[in-house]
Image 1 (cartoon, rainbow, N blue to C red):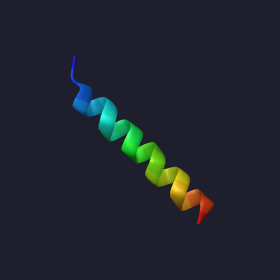
Image 2 (tube, rainbow, N blue to C red):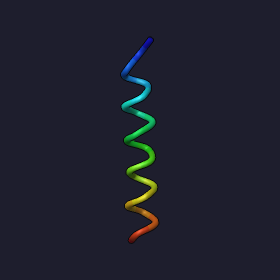
Image 3 (cartoon, helix red, strand yellow):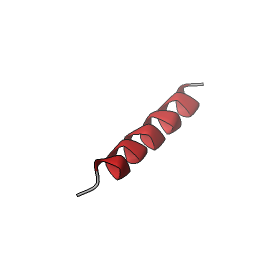
Length: 22
């Protein structure tokens, strides 16, 4: 298992959320 991929996915989600809020 690679936790790095999970972090990238979470980061992408956060970016999308922030972009949507903006």
